[in-house]
Length: 155
Image (tube, rainbow, N blue to C red):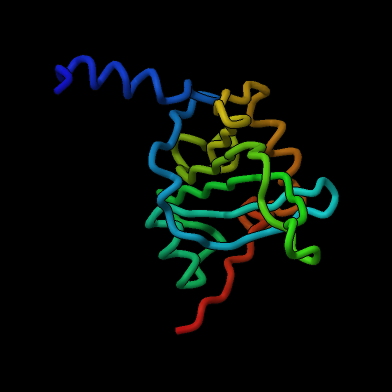
């Protein structure tokens, strides 16, 4: 059994550095699915996941605005055809994970959202700042800066 300090040092080394002043949201891979999308302009597939606050808001239709405490994660892969099913497109190479964190006080200067991205399999922090994200999301400022339409689930 490893000493506690060795375990903590190992966990710390495995967690990617912060991006745009935001700590890496550990455990996001276990969050619930809110939606999926396929960007035909760059051939990527995306799974939009949410923490408990985001999922509850999405299921209740309370997304404009999203409540404080919402964290949306977008896992992005390059899409490619399946060898045995030519009409299907599936995730292949991992591109990045990006996050929107809703905190109207902490992120008041960036429209109530914190914006962060980690690149590739190594999850290297994206360091170009939140303005890159905001400029892309400007067309949906009237939707609380979020492109995603939560997928309808049967009751």
